[in-house]
Amino acid sequence: MHRYPTLTRICCIALLLLTLPNPGYAEPRPRVLVIESYHASNQWDADYTRAIQDSLSNQAELQFFQMDTKRRPVSEHVTQADLAWQTYLETRPDLVILGDDNALKHLGPRFAGTQTPVIYLGINNNPRNYLATLPNNITGILERPLLKRSIVHIQAIMAGELNKILILFDTGITSQTLLKEQFLDNNRLSIGSVAVDIKQINQVSEWHNAIATAPEAGYDAIIVGLYHTLTTANGDHAHEQEIITWSSHHTPVPLFAFWKFAVGEDMTIGGLVLDGYDQGRRAALIAQQALRGEALPRIPQSSGEGAFVFSRRQLDKWMIKLPDNIAAKATWLP
Image 1 (tube, rainbow, N blue to C red):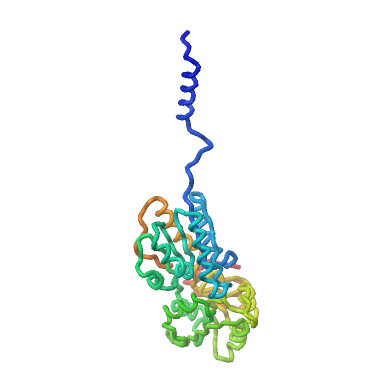
Image 2 (cartoon, rainbow, N blue to C red; image 1 turned 90 degrees about the horizontal axis):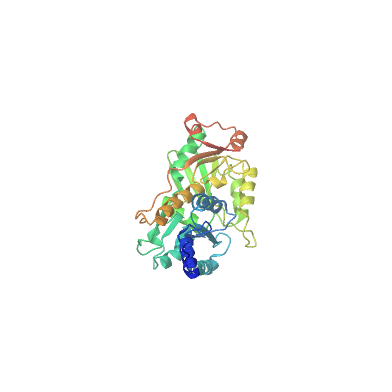
């Protein structure tokens, strides 16, 4: 029988092994860096990052960086942005997601000089205010709370017993931007037959007083906007969950919300709200397209129509029965 020389036989075996699939080898997954304006325990961040993880974790390596600009003073925001940029330079991701205005404001112009696809979400301002031009590699999701429509629905929920309502916001950049974009910096206006007052508040003690004295000022209800940058008397950051829980327990009038993170049994009744999970899901859909090599959409997407979300316990507490057309569309929380 013919025998191959030993060296020839080894070469044939090696060639055969090279042609066989290697069960231990996998194509490297793309890397996605998510830069959050806020912090991981912020409910908005927690909701949209969960959506990103649900949508992308099976196809990409995800890394998160928190700028923490709700709790840190404005004087530290640029430093936090520098740290985020350094993380980008070190990791060289295939795609970046920017969460909320501060991330886009401080990092958008830097990313405009790269080829990295960038998707933003939760943007209240006009992106052109952060980017001199809108480059081909940057697009995303705008956050447009339905403030005026919410008040119309609250009037229906309160069965016509709403004549005057108070809206409370903190003094953070998101609040300032929203009020400028949607109310043209007016702190008093009318929506239908409802008189609306808007207060921007810096300290927790002032927030407490505004809620406690609402009936004396003629308010039939309060809408909680944003409260995440409130400080104590000595300038320390106030814990956001303690603020909304105190508000729920001490309010003398029904308490509604613009965002889902403020709805629940020890929080607010709810209303027509925006949801961070939806923002993250929408951003992740664009990310999936980009990771497949498709071009980014040129026109930013809006945040959508919002959703009716209500707390059963809070509705019972205030003995409010939702109109049938709203109840039929509602998502229910405890």
